[in-house]
Structures are given as structure tokens and as C-alpha cells.
Image 1 (cartoon, rainbow, N blue to C red):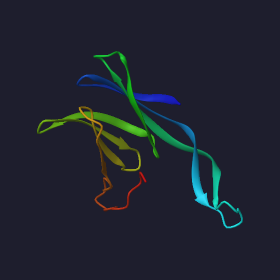
Image 2 (image 1 turned 30 degrees about the vertical axis):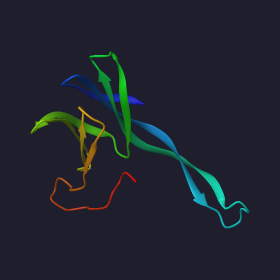
Image 3 (image 1 turned 90 degrees about the vertical axis):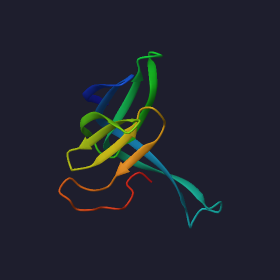
Image 4 (image 1 turned 120 degrees about the vertical axis):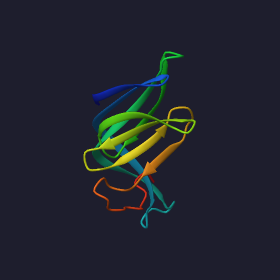
Length: 120
């Protein structure tokens, strides 16, 4: 993994970058008697966001994304502390830094709506 962007956001340092990861998916197999098999897919290009807590001086969490982040911006909306992560293809994701919630935005920056979930 290669860090490409970093920002101070409230009580965290947020580091974003690109890299590769291997995804393991469990699927049904028609030839296997048990019915279950694990299929290892090849490595996929993607990105990550890591939250480093400045209070506890440790890594709070790391999220893996299907796209590398282009920019990270801290935003305060009402009483929520958010980090907006955007990608090069118009992807956008809002992540709360004051809880464990993730708010996916599926609208492209050019105005086209995409209501399918990319994080299932």
C-alpha cells in the first residue's frame, strides 16, 4: 500500500492511499458435496483510509475502498464530525470520525445518479 494523501481531521490524522488486495469470496459450488467452497480471486486495485487517533496515539480503524482516494476533506455537519473522501472517477464517501458510521454517496460528480451499493 502506498499513502497518497493525509489530512488532520478533528481528533484524528486521516491517511489515504492506493494499493492492491486479495478478496476471498464464499460461494456455492454445484460440484462440491458440502456445497461451500472458497474462491480466491486475483489481486484488485483499490484504496484505503486509515484513522490515527491523536488522543490514544494508535490506529483506530482502516477502511478498504474499491477505488483509490483523490482527496480527503473534514466537514462538520450539525453535530457530526465527518471526513468526505472523493475518488478520481467521481466516487464520494462520507465517514463519521466521532462514531463508526459510514455514509456512502452514490451520485457521481457529473450529476448522474447511481443508487446501487458498491460496498456489499
